[in-house]
Image 1 (spheres, helix red, strand yellow):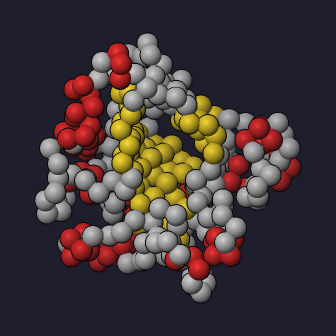
Image 2 (cartoon, rainbow, N blue to C red):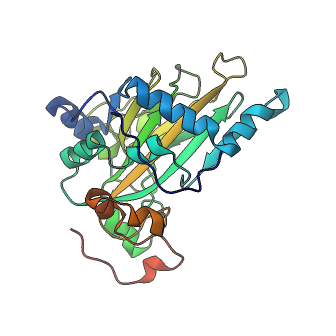
Image 3 (cartoon, rainbow, N blue to C red):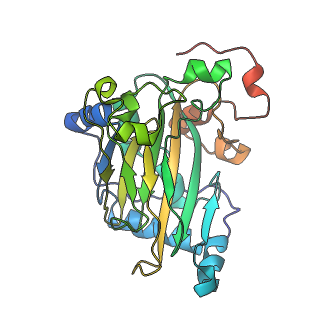
Length: 287
């Protein structure tokens, strides 16, 4: 089903936690991420999976998936067709507690995406997603040290080597210049700058897991084998940024979303979207 209907919000609890621990916050600043295995409640996990699978384009892909569909996937950015559970993720108390604990400056909602990967989908090589880093516009250079937070949700989880996430802990501490590559990070070229031996960490997460990620950390995704027992892996992501100029994918907030926003959500939504030429305007002061 398509969800071109008034915004609805889930009424059940989304997460098994209310706030991060001091140790988790410390690990975020040290490693650049926090892993939360099985952090969603059963109701939220099952509800989110049902919303994704009942979304018309996803249902059509999965219903028509045969051997010829190997390597196909569904990807939508921005993910505007959210159901009640998807909408509730944006300003869930645990999400807001994480943002407050890790980023001291005001935060804005940037954009979101939905991905459903079938057997045979190729890998995503190591990369960073701090979108100002890859542009030399003065706005981007000024914003490079601002936080760009990705919250990665895996409603049906993944096994190691099966569309799984790998991360290079501590790589966010290396200055983001054009000469920094994953190969050089893993070869030891930047160990001194990072203050540690930089090595990759391959994850394996059960259904209902979440990863809270500083997007300056290098990360990659393994391919989905043809012989996997998991037919598809669901991936939902919400991105938040420090208040300031739009990032490359900062999405338009619909009038409907804004009209139904509570004060917390309205503050997250109250920013300019990315438009062609928006970076040519005068630099905004950092908060």
